[in-house]
Length: 42
Image (tube, rainbow, N blue to C red; front, side):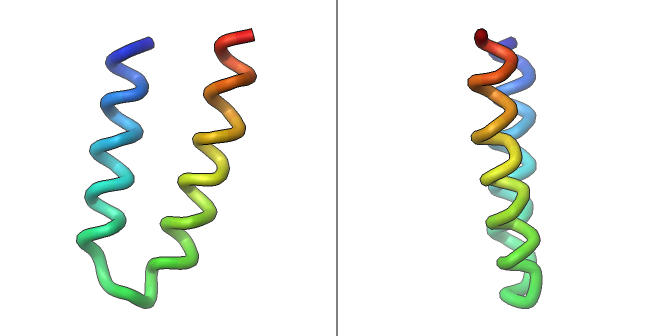
């Protein structure tokens, strides 16, 4: 589980480093991962 969370953090950091045109995609990815994590924990 920790490895999965670390992978998500790496992906988020990579998205933040990308162009500003991809910011909407980055936000949606963060929202999806925020929704998925509680579902996995329950």
